[in-house]
Image (cartoon, rainbow, N blue to C red; front, side, top):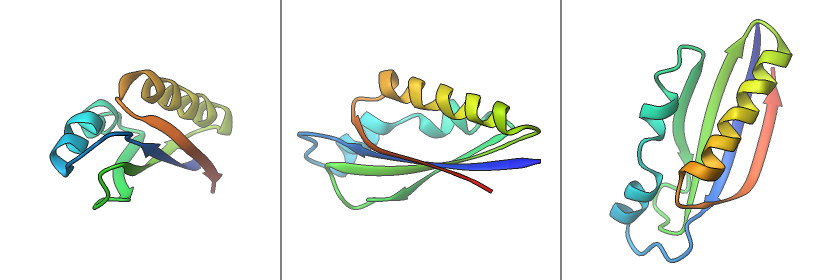
Length: 93
């Protein structure tokens, strides 16, 4: 069993409220949290309007599978949220 922790920090340029932030970042739990091998949460920058940090914990049988899932998550986020990824960190346990 292998585990990866993927932490992504986003910049939400021009975001003026927490409500707007939720709308722009909305749906991450629904999109990724339903996958049995992925857990997701907003892990930082909760009170800032123009930033957001999300952490994904991915579990798999091989490191290669986990790396593939991390890449898929990053790609979907790059095109699926109204924000810019400014920092991506991967940690394997």
